[in-house]
Image (cartoon, rainbow, N blue to C red):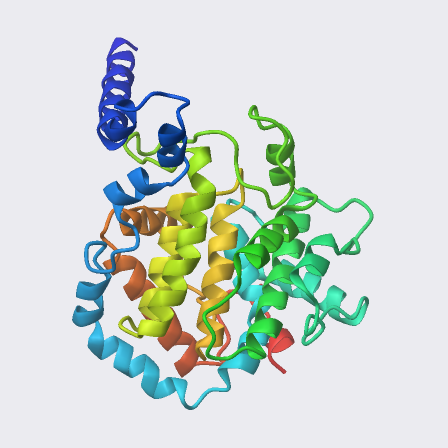
Length: 354
């Protein structure tokens, strides 16, 4: 017990030293002054220290060089697949995996059943989201699949609808840079409505946060006491520059689209702008960008929550190799076997791809 207390104290001191170092320039200014407020809300101190926008420092340039053969192989098979249409059929599996990473117990069979219900009973299947704005999506009332719908099923259903919206709208905007900040906030609202995450928005100590709104409290994770996220007052500026960076990187074409998709996923998660649901939203951002560039959504084989979280954490620390490689491997598996059944008896591929 004593050893654990001492360890926590050392970790707390180490974190305080790190925060003091990162935000040292602000300590030289008069708190409350115009100069202080400008710096505090700029997000520059956090960004200058972690530099999540630097593809070189964060390791993506090197990984792209090292994995060039895999990237070329993915692109060889890409031309043989109707990726934009096929990606729509992969929505249930992509959504199920996304919520599984958040500890949701629903299986792929459950996802297919929910998808079929939304499609056949309510007309919310393939192509149903074309022309639907993100604000309409956020306000949409999704029908219950059963009278006593479990929170886990609500979360899965929301993710299927959000993923369907991404797939349908990306198909009409091929080659563009991706969803806007407003659309991402609406996706966040749509994905957490009616789930336990909605309660996190409502019970925030910093005051109630509207669905899709940015957090009002500083955060930290127990798994890494040195993981530092932007303070709440920094979040709006950090998010704004994330989208500016993404648009500039997309235009520059220096990173392969799949490598850039990986960096933007880790970058967004590192900002962690929402009270909850950041991981689910980051994967929707990734799905959207990859679809617009003609790639399939990332569906990992044999991926568990712990491994995914470790890969993302390492990517945020500038070690993205395992994450990027896993994404490329997932592309190759689906590209080479677009209709192959899985060994899992709950895997109902035939109900997803006719």
